[in-house]
Image (cartoon, rainbow, N blue to C red; front, side):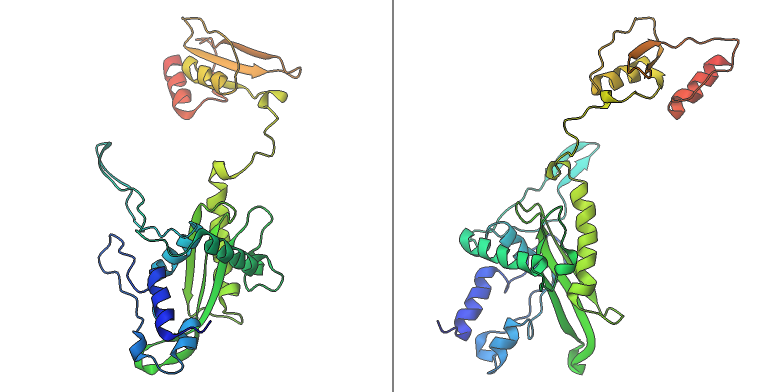
Length: 294
């Protein structure tokens, strides 16, 4: 099928790439992409490779986020809630645009292509592949332009994508202008930064990580000595499903297990004639313990 200039431009409109992302922040630049009537004979292939156009990183990220979201384009926002003394006075929720940028089937095909960038042995982003989760994305390497001076020898290196690709939770873009060194491509410079951030982000999300020791229990090992107020020890027992009753006159208590894994809980006596041991106590409890001994 022949791709005309008008059809190509209309598809960019469908993708939402000819308009700003409309983030709630003043100063967002609109994309720079000329109408087909102003194109030269070489504009179509050049634009397809990323030249003759300008997009902010956020505008590019919004497009890739729509691919991760099965074709649904979301409006980016910075503030989730406005609080006043702990009370929510304004809340912002995710909102989508009225029209999908593509069918879910097309988005799935795009995801597969983006996965090959990272997972294929010849992919430009192969250096950030990991067995722990899947990354889908695209490297970008373009010569930097400085107005009327034209293009320079410096690269604008980028990597944009989303993870975990099988069930995307996060999308991210890394853009580095004029990196120094022998290798200054998006795959060599920006992709490793993306991977470093992705590793830290995904490990902080407990829902996206399966426990490798989910069938084990802390009770299989001797518990360390724990000393604190009765309330703190009770909370500890509750967390680890240790069932012991405390007497009402106990202010401080301890819990421990011996080498035979027998768990014991008892009252912590305040002997006025000995230097108290604060081992295992929190700082506030240790200070308070010393004060009442004095």
